[in-house]
Image 1 (cartoon, one colour):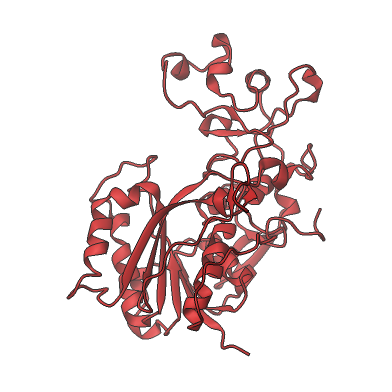
Image 2: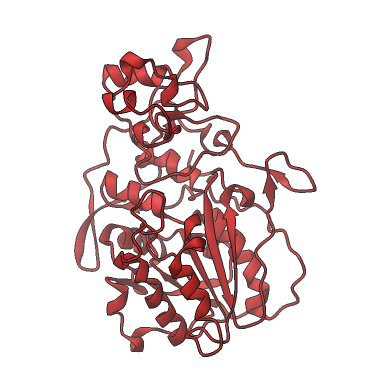
Length: 388
């Protein structure tokens, strides 16, 4: 039996990367680091508490960093994100240096960095590449980078992210896409919103999360909650319901009658086209962000909308459970935190389906096996037959 591949997950969040890598089989997490209590508790609930380090990554001593075969992680991206200030002096943008410290200490064969698309055009990315040059902190590693679209790897979401693969076992290309919009050239068709959530009850079964507490790291947090318990309804106002009802699939705020628009939108004649948007059944969703439960933040209205039958319309934002499905989390995943904390975990996570594709692709390089082009099969990790 092959030796397990030792995995370190930095800035681990709730464990999207670890979910995908462990689903690929052969990987064993030996350390994870996360400073947010609720996210760290969710990780611990799914993968174990003993190897999760709760706290600031900069406070982890070198002596506590184990050797590993692969390090994965996504340093906080708000400084690079279109949604942020893109402030080059944002201290969050410096956390990649801590990532490098772990690489130098653990000496993995491969490391993977995930970040927002704009990261590739940032000064921090240029500095990262420079560190792989002779004399740099990452000397000996060859870097490959690309923008990957999660939908191209079986995730029902058009989420575009920068992926950087660093290797000291020879150059490693990016994983070949397994899906495409129309399923040509032997690839599968993109997974859609319908594939992800059509089997879930149209009327959510819960008003709130259960009043339940658990303890991790000696601290009390809300949870554990099953995926079913995340199917939580909201209570929109009558005016909000009127707005929702006017938006067809693929539409947005420009479909809302003027008298129903908030004043801030009435004065903004262009831009932000996806807000108050409705998903489309037979397309992947747009990016699931941390406030997916607010239609005014993006294209988050449920896709069901019959143009001829107003009674056959679902006028609500997607639920936490639906968002987790669109991120490709398995139904067996359990969660800790408040509704807002769990939403943040879902929106910030690396889609496990994308992580799985990367993990399958890297395994032969980590094992020292011949590396011919491979097409990993689609991981069935967004559904569970035992949890309807």
